[in-house]
Length: 126
Image (cartoon, rainbow, N blue to C red; front, side, top):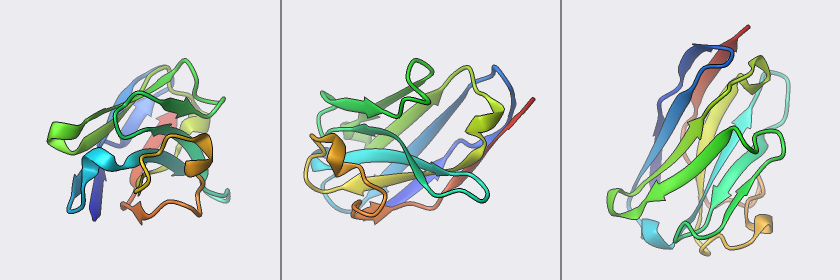
């Protein structure tokens, strides 16, 4: 399974970005998909996760109400819509796949995901 994330960039505080992650190989429609981020000098952290069908979604408290994760299985793509961005959201964002449907929050641990994509840089200026 290969994952390719894109959509990062430079945006002013209060702005929006939409990240995409396209999968190839494997059975995307059975994967739980997660978004994680890593800021300079910090550990990688969970941002959001979506189950195989999109019926169960989890968010980190820091992004609730601002970020939306959704997926289109026919396109093998998961998205992260980020609104009301803050400088603290500056990080490299990664998508990752969990091959067990991703129904539980515990599925989305940084060291428990099965496949990772390369990150995309998001920089929010103040």
